[in-house]
Image 1: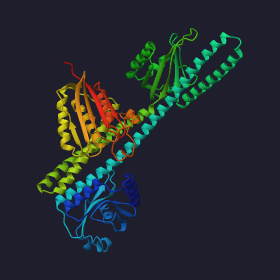
Image 2: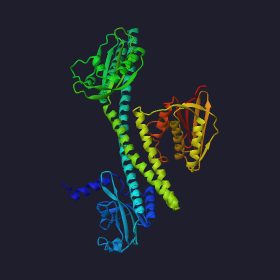
Image 3: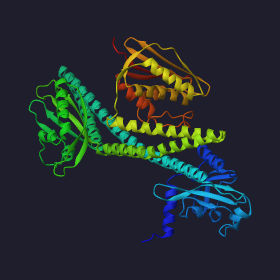
Length: 582
């Protein structure tokens, strides 16, 4: 059955809304593309047009003084309904569709029009990249091909923006879930501290009661108050456990008696009145995690240290997998009538794990889908650059160099998301080898000198330093620290880079004269997706993954990374790597 045209148009308009592009401010990236299209085709006007319900709105309008026109006068409305890859009108004054159009009979006196539809991945034509001129024209095959390539780049940029917005929303949901879990754990810890304090007060009151009969009445009243507070603390603890949806358990270390709470039984598929043995709690753990959990519990009981584990279990009867987080601690009581016991809590973290998996799958999918068009885009840009250099077209060369920089930025951002995803699932690979760190720093110096002209970057002399590390990843860390220094310090300011050998470590530092960082922000600076919020940093692009990746890479090399900074006085980032022993 052929779908109703009105229904198709409704779906197209809904698709256009998902890009959040209408009525946004002008952007240089899009303006460079319309200038390039105008230059290649030799026209006075070039537009990036989106066809809305009653209007056509221009994201970029080179050579045209308005930002929108009625849809009834739109050439682009015809282009998006055309089955061809490009709609060309050589002489609008002789075309029955357009000869009475106010845009033909009046300003801007359109005679020639060529428009390539901007088609998204679902096949909806959102608008066009078009070129317009008051003189009749004919495009060559090379000009038509170039126009299609530029239209493809416009669409790729739009797709990237949409998918990055989706990723930001997913990360926000994940951060909210983690914050909730941290808050509930904090409440539980506070309740446990209050309980311990009240127990100590109870012991002290009993001792004073035995010392004198004269103060018996007063002490009894005090004890009653303490017991009331203790009961209140128990109620608070129980409420916190209930709100946090925690399961609890106790193990008598001598008799091995196991007492799980109702909620913990439910996690494993046991009813309220059913007996759940300790063996079931172990046997229902996924096999690849079972020995690790048993070893952690035994180690905790033997050494008296807390344990904190995350592992999957299989629910009885349904065989449903459930991820849980279990914490436990040995409670030693100096009372023969109250033997020591091992107890703890358990919380269902399945939703968090699923969110993490969905996010990692989404990152992998988006990265794969974006890498392919970016590779093709890079090849086409190289072709256009060769042609522009052959024709000595300075404007086109400059515009294409800017486009190339944007493509590199996109590639770097995608690679960063991929690295975060690999870190979270433990799949990032570190290829350690012996190399001279001074030689790597020299290569970074040559690259920075050639690429960064906005700042004065000073590299201190460096002697031969032998380390065992992943050369590419350490280079990535150095480049990231320099890039951050450039982003967060004023143009023309100085950035100092140094590397020295001290004791058994190589110490690397990157110092800037930027805005500085508060002590509170310094504590969270290397956390995943953390960004410093403020007026100065509001306009600086980023997702808060660069320093997190640097931290994880250095930690995987048994090194350390830190920052020294004062607000308004610049920052000095450091990291250390172990030297190769002679």
